[in-house]
Length: 355
Image (cartoon, rainbow, N blue to C red; front, side, top):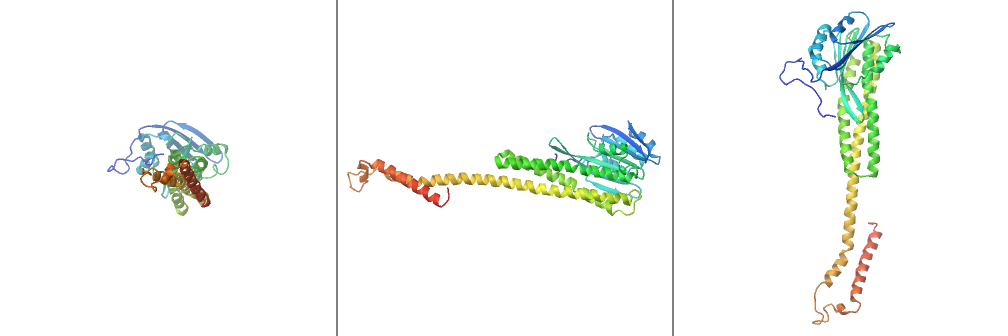
């Protein structure tokens, strides 16, 4: 996961400057529905979507991938979307936010995904008017298949309520994608904990550091959702959002709080794993130093004895010049003295519980 993953226009360019992505690859789907009827269309160009917006049905236009700048400009002119909003949609990596106007709402969300152990954040943008919702999702993954299934099967309230309830459903779905990611993090943390108990491989420290950085980055991308939903909950004068939808948004707020708190816990746990690893390494180092110290200390008396008897004094000159060198069992006596000194040191260390 990249540390900096924001697209932007060059410094000094005019606000609202629309830059084209290097890769233009997108699909457009349109669902037009009311309480009793629903139509599902796959359209080739965004410009053709304007024909459906004039009716009284709820119209959901979803753009998946990276649309062209020309198509976005055409759509913006037909729907009165501000050029700054188009710039934010095309330049992925924006901070989650909500802009509430009297007759339209613009929302940017971050979609956390985990694919085979790789975490990535895609951008979801929503533009809502009274009867129309336009959603944009970068990347190839379509996150709203379950919402489409509910619409087609006419399950729950989604077909019976205006476009603002569809907006709530998409926000709720986007936020709830954080829970599978939390589950993946929990499994990774548990695996690392088990490995730490069995091995002190230095590669584990690298994995812990990478996981800790990733959790911190995801937490920073998820955190602004709390303020975003809070702004919606505090909105009183808006023709797009009904009181019923605001009540449902409180559930999204609770989910964001839950994900945020869990990510904070995981961040603290990864810090604890790192401290546990470093403590284990220090304990192992202390054991090595302890062994070397005991080994050195045990052999200090024999070394002293060897050093004393390594001095070359002639016993024929003086009877005090190591007369034991002429003894029949002098060599064995020295070895025995060395053995006694080593044994005594070991017994002393054992009684002090140093070994």
